Length: 71
Image (cartoon, rainbow, N blue to C red; front, side, top):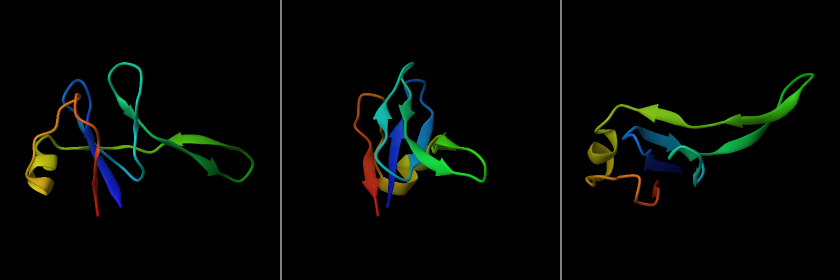
């Protein structure tokens, strides 16, 4: 499963889990990452080319919309 959303500046993102609204009108999702020697959280959000969300789901999204889940 994946989640699609649009940041306040129009950037489209995809995330493995439902993102939350962050500072600066950006969606955020982080996950604990275990590494050899150190561990911490890592931002896991991938930027998509503009227009990708419409091509995938046939719907325009804006910052005001909640993220949508795609299966």
